[in-house]
Length: 326
Ligand code: F42
Image 1 (cartoon, rainbow, N blue to C red):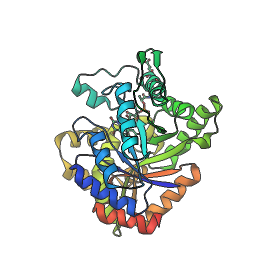
Image 2 (image 1 turned 135 degrees about the horizontal axis):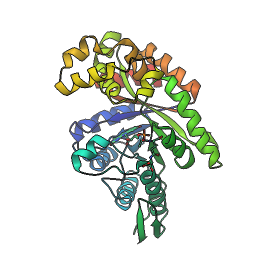
Image 3 (image 1 turned 120 degrees about the vertical axis):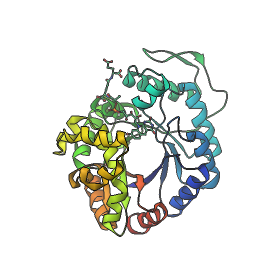
């Protein structure tokens, strides 16, 4: 098992560098930085992290092929790989529809766009002249002018077809989920894609990109995660809520409270224990260890501690290092 940590660059980059250094000291293997236009830029952030750490791997978690052309992504990740001494990982997913709506970008054929972009990026990284006449991605003899080295490509995916595609073509997959029930399904879909492509499913690093909250006080850990879980419930397909026995009609109420900024209602009981159990790894070190052990049994190979990490980020990173990784 490897351990990753996710940071959202809504915080100043130097603050994230401080946390990333601490995570490296505590034995984390990977740091993943999210990519949304309204936060600090993902590659600027990762570059600062490269200059402030020595061996932790540095990934986009995840970028997308709509706001950045595949040739630009190849150049950016190759630059990071050079700067960091070969520690870069490209995490790429189709992106976030709400963000694209706000940017006036139409989200056409996300699966095909992701697939064709990965094909192009792999060719760029291999130093090839790229000629591609895909449905969504086209290149006419573009080529990088410097060597990228080896850069693993991970996909951000949840849907059945995306997971199957990840099994076919990706080195790893970052799955926004926290519960064994979701991974039972996901691991099967990834394996079916891998088999289709004649690969051993074990070649694919399966990462639980989880809402994570740890504290010695379980109630404090839960309070820190409630708002994140509320966002996950509001954005989950009905099928996923039903899989966890959560009343689908609760989604509208939670979505309404988020829209009104009524965090009191969310904290005051709207986010139920069942929702917390389904959509977070949360509680004391022993609680978190028990969930992690269940996930590993099913075939998860990387645990990524995502937002909020804990009520106190620094304490939480140290607690994970001492009690879980250590
Ligand atoms: N998105 C961001 O914008 N920024 C981030 O930092 C970010 C981080 C992140 C981390 C982990 C993670 O798992 C996801 C993350 N995301 C982030 C979201 C990510 O970019 C994607 O939005 C998300 O993972 C995609 O969800 P999904 O796997 O459910 O895929 C969607 C597109 C879907 O509908 N998939 C369907 C499926 O079954 O998998 C397939 C749909 C399909 O086949 N479409 C056809 C096609 O070609 O695209 C077209 C069909 C037609 O008829 O048009």
